[in-house]
Amino acid sequence: MQRMTWVAIVAGWLGARAPDAVSDRYEATVTIRPIGAVGRVTEHVEDVGSGDAVATSVYGGGGEIGLSYGLQNWLDVGGEVVGAGFGQATYDPVSVAVTGSTAMGRLTRTTRIVQLRAGATLRLGVGWVPILHLGLGVGARVLSAATLLDEAHAGSFDVTPDGMNATFAIDIVAHARVGLEHRLDRRWTVGVSAEAMHALGFGTQPLDIASVGVSLSYTWYPVFSP
Image 1 (tube, rainbow, N blue to C red):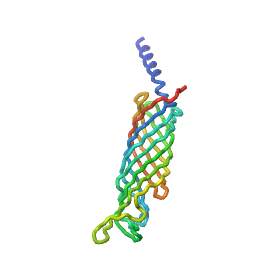
Image 2: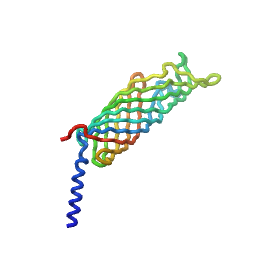
Image 3: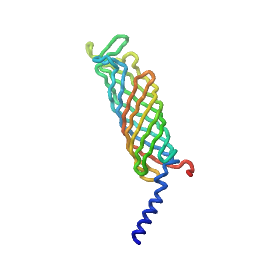
Image 4: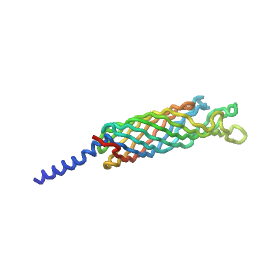
């Protein structure tokens, strides 16, 4: 009799939890995700050794704010706004043009990005939920004025190479994210994720970013779900 009582209690608890466990459909979710990132930044300057365009890695960070809606228990669609900034990228030594003449030295520049992205997320679980997200978007890449430290002359001085003033470029963005989320209750979810992003710019070089983040999500039902 006691065993049957416990079975009934467990069955009742599972039944009470079932609506929460399969309720990803029809849910709207807002997510905040701070990120730490490393960017592979390329400049159209010549490496003194190879003569090729130069790429370097820089660390940075930022955040993502997303809004999604559950079409199925396993599929969400939505959009997100992303902002991030990176430390000063250094290219040394490089050859650039300064007032029409060739100069060599150490070049520095900083990059910031703002992006608007849309995509779909596969949700492959209930309480603990592996996720796979794919998306596309557009963005603005803000570049500071580049500075060349030229030590080839008597003394050293900073100059801005030709065509490398402060500017911004429009990017087409593709990204992928994998992660693991844990549903704390009907409303709140926490998670960790890793992401790769590739941006193709108009009038500038490609930009690749790898990032990791932690997320906090809040869920509600904007419409009646059958």
